[in-house]
Length: 217
Image 1: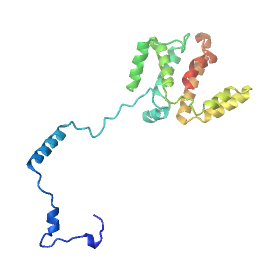
Image 2: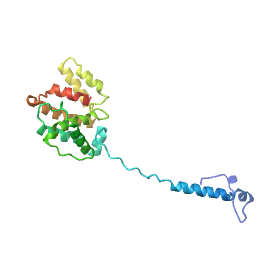
Image 3: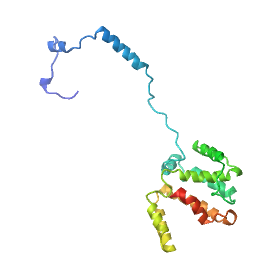
Image 4: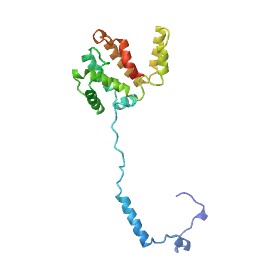
C-alpha cells in the first residue's frame, strides 16, 4: 500500500532470495503452542460485551427542559399541562399549592409520568397534583428562569418605580430560551387563573409568588 522508492522493493522471480527465507518466523515450540491455545480458549470464554448498549429510557423529571420538549414533540411539559388543567377544574380550594399531597400519591404520579403515561387524576389527587407540578420545576437542572438571567430578574424586582419594574421584567422574560418562554407563559396563565379565585383559595398573586418563586429561580 502506498508508493516506495525502487531500492526498497525486492522482486521475487523464480528463486526465493536467501534474505527472505531467513526472515520467515520459526515454528512455535510445542510447549509455547499449548500455552497460546490455552490463552485463546480463555479469551473466547470471556463474556462478550454487547455491541450496542441498550438505549436508556428518556427521563421526564430532572431533565433539561429544551431536550425534554424536543424529545416529546410538545410545546410545554405534559406534567404541567395535565396538572394545571386538573387543578383549574377541581382544585379551586383553599390552600392549593401551599399544602402538600400524600407522599405515596405523589410518588405514584411521578412514576406514571416517568413511564410517559398520563395518569387518571381523581379529586383526592388535587394536592398531590399541585405538589408534583412544583416538583417538576424544582428538579429541572436549569431553572425555568435560568441562571444566566438571575441578575436581570433581580434587578427588575429592585427597580424604584412600577413602570420601570415592568419594563425590566419584560426585557428579562424576552431573553428566555423559547422552550422556557412558552412554559413560563403557560404557567403564568394558570397561576393568574388561580389568583382570580383568591376569595375561595386565599391564594392571591403574592401568596402564589411566595410558594412558586423557589421553584422557578
